[in-house]
Image 1: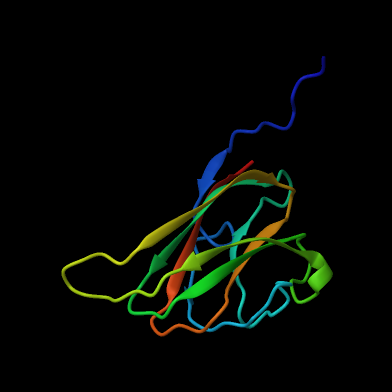
Image 2: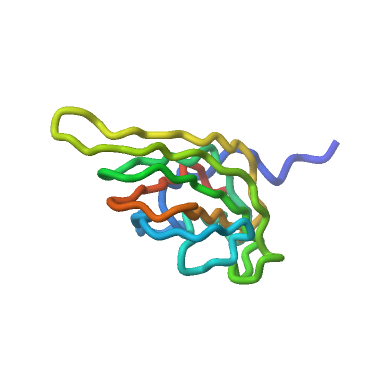
Length: 145
């Protein structure tokens, strides 16, 4: 039996957008998009290492103020332009409830489990189904191989 040259354990954790120090931006605008090709509304939340790939454990959605109800749609991209629908796979979606920001209570956080490895250069994009006022932030929790 040959040695495993592709370890499943991450070499380093990754909670950024693109394996840089850039953190996720706020989602406020939306499109009724089931292809992931609406570039102006879908945000990059994770990029696997270009050589060895990566592992995506979960996505955490955090309301940052008062919002109407919406949905977050999650797409896996093959590393090419996400504006071409055939480069994206609609992976799943999660309901985002209406939220009200007040000074005495926390706004909701929602975890969306993923738990799978990504091929080198593959990406995760997220978009909203409806426009919201204050916005949501999506943080990808994963690692690079």
